[in-house]
Structures are given as C-alpha cells and as structure tokens.
Amino acid sequence: MDELIDILDETGKRTGNSSLKSDAHRLGLFHPTVHVWLCNTKGEILFQKRGKNKKTFPDLWDVSVAGHIAFNETYENAALREVAEEIGIQLKKEQLTKIGERSSKATHPNGLIDHELHHVYVVTIDHDINQFIPRQNEVAALQFIGINVFKDMIHDEEKMKMFVPMQNNYYSWIVEKIETHL
Image 1 (cartoon, rainbow, N blue to C red):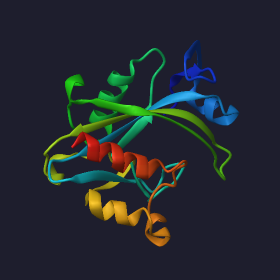
Image 2 (image 1 turned 120 degrees about the horizontal axis):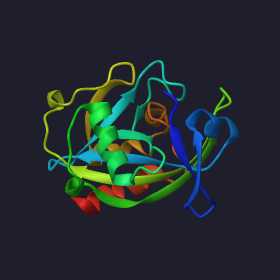
Image 3 (image 1 turned 90 degrees about the horizontal axis):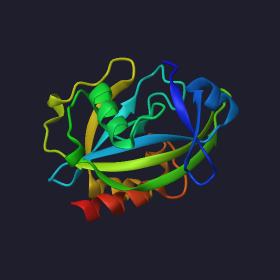
C-alpha cells in the first residue's frame, strides 16, 4: 500500500515535505520508520518471519514489528498502529520504551532504495505466542528466541542468513539494549 510519508533532512529532522512511500524508495529519500522489539520476562525476543511476497527480504526473520511512519504521525502512534496491524496486539504508549535511533541505507536488487531513520522501541509483554494474530501476506510466522540463544546466533554467519541483514552491528546493539531494559 502506498502512503504519504515524511521526508527528513540529513540530521533526521522532519523537513515539512512529504512523498509517497514508493517515490521515497525510488529516489532514496531519507524518511522515518519504527522498529518495535517485543520481549518477555523469560528473556525471549519475538521475531517475525516476513511474508513470501514482501518486496525486500521475503521469508527472512526480522524485527518483531516494523513499519513506515505516516506523514505528520507521531513516532509513538506509528509504533502502536504497526503493532496492531502486523501482530494484532493493542498496546498503550506507556508500554513503549524508546531505546534509540538507527540510520540505515540500502539499495535492493529490485531497485528499491531504503534510506531510513529507525525509531527503535522495546516492549516487555508476557503473551503466549498464540495470542498474536499475524497479518496475512505480511507476516508468515512468529517465534520467540531466547536472548542468549540469539546472542550466539549473531556470531554464526550461516544462522544469520535466516535473518534480514542489518548494518552497523544492529542486532548486537538490540541485544544490549533489551538486556538493559529487562
């Protein structure tokens, strides 16, 4: 679905300009997204397997929830909306803990240019995996992985081929932030 999104300047501030998401990806315009990492008190992280029809990284494991921020939408509202849309859970703003921002730039084989500033949140939620309702065609599966198991996986090149590739030690940074959060 094409939607109107904010365009950012080089420092990550909103310019007041907007673009269709498809144009931002075609032109490589810098824009904001949200990443929401869900974990539980057992020390497990929720991962989603991207749907097989996704334009980028189909069938790979990824952040619990991620998505674009609509034009003039607050980052927190975008995070709540994306969680509800992708995995069927209603959260409150108070449950979101912002753990930082990460810039990412990638050009994909299909010509899509992702130049994004991820606003990254973590949420502790003790839901059984069956309480989530994955959005058909977007989320193929959900899985909890123990934080220590994932920490070991990060250093295994073969196992990491099952995950969306991230830049600048993103996964190590996430593990560190989630451990601090728990």
